[in-house]
Image (cartoon, rainbow, N blue to C red; front, side, top):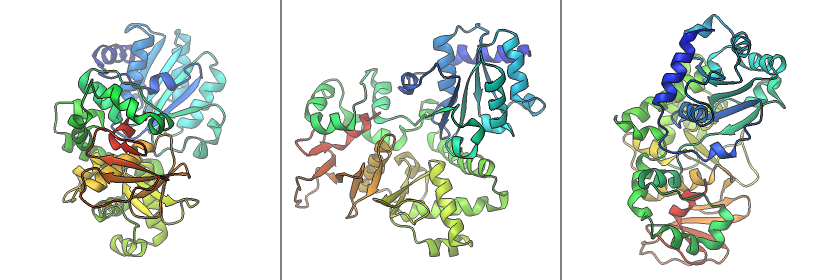
Length: 396
């Protein structure tokens, strides 16, 4: 077994400094033998693997090993072969980063599962991968989880050293006044909210480098690697996908005009719809449908996946209302289904709860309906069916 891998493993563990323990760490059933962690680029999957190794194994404990499929060594050697060697030398847990860089990765993982019963494999992959649908050999044996960008709660904990825990939507709706009273004496959310909206979703804001440059690089990688490589699309179509993303972004949150977009990027309507789906899988956009509809129908609204992305696209006029709706959808998206409601700013959550996102400081006269939940921004507290929008950032 190559000594170099253990050296790299120890070095990375020594130098990994996860400033925040992600809550997913406690949601995973670590007794499973094959665990997949999917997530979009830049949300911290590598750090997550290293943090797991650090918490559960010593830096020089050789029963656990982290390897990255970016390593050219694996061009000449399959995962199963490598894993068998690792087990012979007492290996118990293999952490594989960027598994999709290996051509037959799913068959190789299946082989490991069948022939190495004492080995546990935890691997990371892109959010674009359809683990079960596209890799039938992993059906029934892989447990898959999603690592997301930072929630507003995680961002606040990181910035202030607090350890606020998440709340369910039900808890927030029933007790938001009480919950806010617990949080507000310790921290003023409004002090951090606009920073979070601007750069708090992707953990790499912690690095001392230009955040927007980094984010642009990440967005390019999402289209070039996650979409082209994983979906096996020819390189010549890359500019079409990027142009489509740009047009959707500057168009703002609305129903896309598929015929117009097809003309703009010179392709068919069906291809435009497929590309929109790929952009959603890559977590660059969210597609919002009326209740009861879904892809391949045309979405009622396409919006950016999270508010940070909106600042990276120039010249996007970023309106407060759009930012706040984007924050709302992104916060809900982990455990809830969000559909388009009747009017523009209305959403239906889990097919029953009506939400309206509104500005608490707006001068416009508003009729409050008892059957609607008003998620209001520019305020720290709420009352009855008027809840402070920032608190929905505590859902995970």
